Length: 154
Image 1: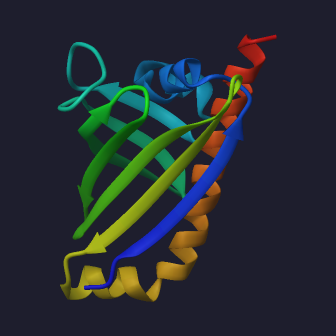
Image 2 (image 1 turned 90 degrees about the vertical axis):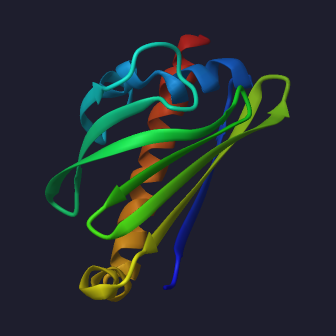
C-alpha cells in the first residue's frame, strides 16, 4: 500500500528547551493548540515512551478522537507518536533542530499507511485533500506553539 507523507517546518524564536516543553505538555494542549478540542491523558508520569492520550480535533468539518501513543522519545531533540484508526496507521515524528542561540526549527513529519481494503482505497482517493488538511493543521499547531513560547520569552 502507498504511504502518504507530509513534512512541515517552522522556525520558533526560542531555544529548544521551552519548545520541547510546549510540544510535550499534553495537558496544556487544550490551551495552546487551537485545533485541539479535548485531551484525555491515559497514562501517569512524565512524557516519554509509552505515554498515551486521546486527542479530539475537528478535521474536514467533523470531530474525530484518536488514541495516540509515544513510541520513541529522545529529549529534547525528537519524539514519535503513533495511532491506528479506520484501517490506517499514522506516525508523527517531531524533530527539534537548533537554529541559533535563541531559535529552534521544528520539523514534523506525518505519515499515513493504509492497511488495504476499502478503507485503504478511500485513503488513496482522498489522499490529496487529506494531505492539504493535515498540512494546514500541522502548520497551525506549530504556529500556536511558536506564539505561546515566543510570547513567554517577552
